[in-house]
Image (cartoon, rainbow, N blue to C red; front, top):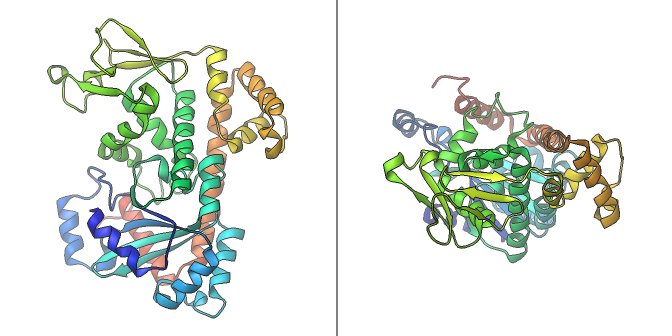
Amino acid sequence: MAKHVAPLLRRFPDMTFAFAYGSGVMHQPGLYSSHTLQAHARSSTLEMPMTDLIFVVEDARSWHRKNISVNPDHYSWLFRSKYGHHMVCDLAESVGVGVHFNALVQVNDQVIKYGVIEVQHLIQDLEDWRSLYIGGRMQKPVMTLLENSKVQKALARNLKSALTAALLLLPEKFSIESLLKSICSLSYNGDIRVGLAEDPMKIGRIVEGSREGLEAMYLPMLLGKDCCVLKDEALGTNNDISSHKLVQGHAQDDKEETSLPFPGVVVQASEGFLQQDMSQQARLELLRQLPVCILHGMSRRLGFDVPENHLIMDETREHVLIMATASGRHTELLSASIKAIVRSSSMVQAISGAMASDGGKAIRYMISKLRKAGWLQR
C-alpha cells in the first residue's frame, strides 16, 4: 500500500512530515464488503474509499500559497484568489484546530482527503493534548510517509500519555483487548460525529484490523522492550484474548507473577490478564504523566481554575494531582476532561470544515460518511 500512497507526495509542495491513516490504508474488518468494493469499482471514482493523509509543514501560509497555485481545484473557489492562502489559515486557526482539510480530491486513480497542519501545532497537540484532533489519530497505527525526528519524539510522548490515560480508565484487572480498546476510544470519547457520521463499530474494527500494530506500539512500553505475546493455539484462536500468555523476554512459569516496567502493573500469565496497582500512590504516579491540558481540565472540575502555565510548576501540579487522587474521582475527572477536549475540537473543526468546503464536495463527503456509519443503504 505504501508504494501506492508515497508517490502522491510529489504532487504537493515540500513538507516536514506526512502520514496516511484511516480505513483507506489500515484494514478495518467488515467495513467494506466485497460486494461494496465491487460496487465502488463500477461507480464514480469520488465514491470509492478515500485515502486519508496528513501533511505537516513548517509554514502553512507559504505552503497553501504554493499549493493553490499548483492545485487550485483542490480548494473551494473562495480560496483561489491572491490572498486565499491567508483565508485558509485564518479560518483553520481562528475557527478550527489549526488544520485545513481538502476532501474528495482525485489524484490519478485515487481519491484522497488531506489535512495540512504546522509542525509547531502538531507537536503541541502531541505533547499537551490541546485538541487531540491529529494527536488522537496518531495514537493508532498510521502509515508514515515522511519522517521527522522532532515529530517522532513528540509522538513517543503522546503514546505514553495514551497508555497512561487508558490504564487510569481501566479496572484493576483487564485484558490486552480491553487495553487497546481503551486507548483507541480516547480520541472518540465526546466526538460529535460518533453515532451520526462515524461508524459506530469503528473502535472494534480498528482494534481488530490493527491489532498487531497496536500491540507493537504499546506492549513494549508497558511490558518492557524485550516482551513478547505468546498465543497458545490449544486454548483458542489468535483473536481469543484468553489464549494469550504474556511474558517478558522469555517464557515464564504459568503461576508466576512478573513485575513489569510500567509503574504498578503486573502480569498474571496463568490467566492471560494484566493487573494494576489501584492504590492512591500508584494512581498518583500515573496521574503525574498526564498532559498539561488534561490536568488543567481536571483542576477546573475540582474547583481550581489554575492557568495552564502554572501547571508546569512542580508544586502547583503536585497539589492538583494529590487533590485529584484524594478525591477518589480521578477516573471521572480524567474521562470528563478528555471528553470535553474531544467534543470541543470535533465541533469547531466541523464548523471550520463546513465553512471551507466546496458545497458539492461537502454533500458527497457527508453521504460517504453516513454510508460508513450505516445510516444510508448503498
